Image (cartoon, rainbow, N blue to C red; front, side):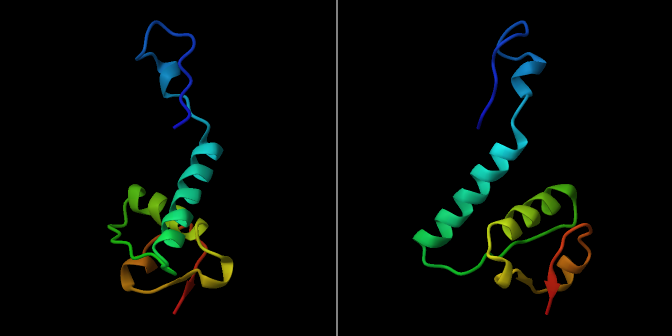
Amino acid sequence: MNIRTTGGTGPFSAETLTIDHAAETDRIVSGLRGQLRSMKKRGLVLGLSGGIDSTAIAALAIASRPVDSQTCHGNAIRRQSGLSMRMT
């Protein structure tokens, strides 16, 4: 994780929590792609509750897959909002 530690009044200042969101997203997506490649898998299986954490995980999973393979199955995913995905 890219955490800046300069400034503030010690290792636990508000500045410590400042992250580069784009860089972290790229790092996580690259990690997911690498894992899928190394395990010779074509997709991901997620258990989603419908909360904000599930929404973030779903968005990262979608970003890790090629556009032509972003197909989702299941009723739980239909309740997620703000994600662009094709239902089958």
